[in-house]
Image 1 (spheres, rainbow, N blue to C red):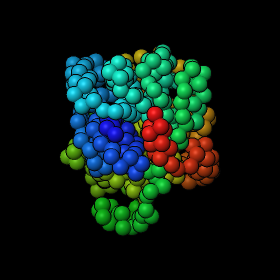
Image 2 (cartoon, rainbow, N blue to C red):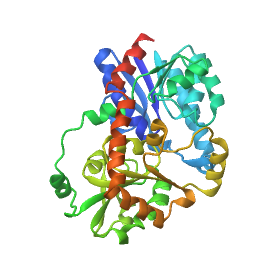
Image 3 (cartoon, rainbow, N blue to C red):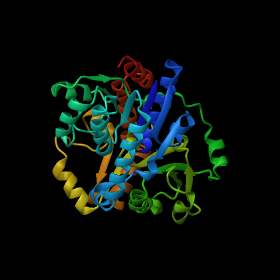
Amino acid sequence: MKYYIIAGEASGDLHGSNLIKALKQKDSHAEFRFWGGDLMAAQGGIMVKHYKDLAFMGFLEVAKNLRTILNNIKFCKEDIRNHRPDILILVDYPGFNLRIAKFAKELGIKVIYYISPQLWAWKEGRVEVIRKYVDEMMVILPFEEDFYKKHGVHSHFVGHPLLDAISDLKDINIENFKSENRLNEKEIIALLPGSRKQEVEKMLDIMLSVRPYFKEYQFVIAGAPSLPKEFYQKYTDENVHFVSNRTYDLLRCSKAALVTSGTATLETALLNIPEVVCYRGSKISYAIAKRLVKNISYISLVNLIMDREVVKELIQNNLNTKNLVEELRKIIDGEKRIGILKEYELLRQKLGGSGASEKAAEVILKV
């Protein structure tokens, strides 16, 4: 069978790669053509475009790059028309993927959506598009199945694919990791500033402002695969280091982490590392988002899934050096740290066991 997969972000590349791996095990004649990244490419198939050419963050950046985005949509439609896959698999990335879903459905191609857009937070009206143009919805958060059921859309809760990725990790030796990456003997505080250049520049300055208050620790930046090593050099010194393409290993060797809101907040929790969640957008983008987002009290996946504050979220004006120092101290030692680790155990139970990618592959083959 011919599969066409579209993943427009780093997290989608991870989940897409695990899905390809599962599909190959169940379909010996599988052929893959995809928009994604290095992880998907490692599984085989033909990559049409890399997600680093697609990632535009915030309302202003999208507006500035509208012509590029529209050209990408046009190119994608032409590519699908020319190659006529048996099935189209869309991984999150709704602004782009929902347009492609409509186009593919009108061509008579089966459309599967894997990893739901966050319609329960905003743009709930897009459910109508999904009802009309998506043959099967596969969701990875437990409350999403009820959301779609309420709107008359059939969906499958397959579990969270991050559990698959994390369960495959081998044990790591902290001293070896430090030696391999030229780190010193101090304990590590990991910095996960995001994957887009604009986002990283905005977040790293404020994250690194806590350094004078934690001289007994070294800070290590998790480099995004979409950004060159040279980009990070202006932020490094004798006590600030940089590690590329080893975020999971870095987290497992860390005492605590400062994490930009996104999938990384859940990855950090599932790796059992106490964290402070950070977010700051432009004033205009934040004002627009605040008007549009509804019915949710949190921005991190950890708190959304647990429906209570498990990890501290410092958003917009609350994201400052004083608050960061205070919250980081709480999670390095003491009762707050112990409490977070207990909550992480409950989080894993809520997400179910591993096997999400395999379950998703089974649903796809049935369709």
